[in-house]
Length: 102
Image (tube, rainbow, N blue to C red):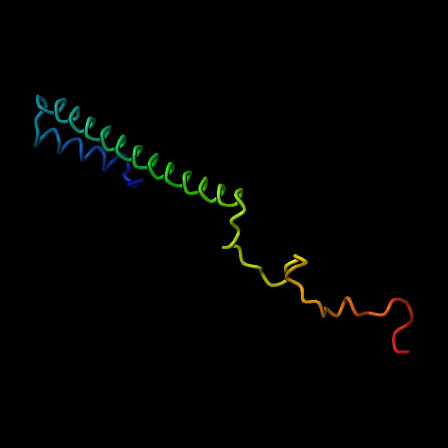
C-alpha cells in the first residue's frame, strides 16, 4: 500500500528507538495501534452507512416499480414495446406472398 520495503522499515524502527527511546516505545506502539483500530472502526461504520443508504434507495425504487409508478420510465429507441411502434410501420404494410420486383 505504501510501498515500504524492509530497509525503509528498519530505518523507521531505528529512528523510533533513538527518538522515543526503548522504554517508551511499547507505549507509543500500543497507542498507535489503538488509533489505527479506531480509524478502521470509523471506516467500517462509514461503509456500512453508505451500504444502508444504497440499499434503501434500491428498495424505494423497487417499491415504486412494484406499485406501478412507471412514469419515469422512458421508451428507448428500437424498443420492442408495441405501444411505442407507430401504426404506419413498414413491416405491417408488406404484401403477403408474391416475388420482389413484380
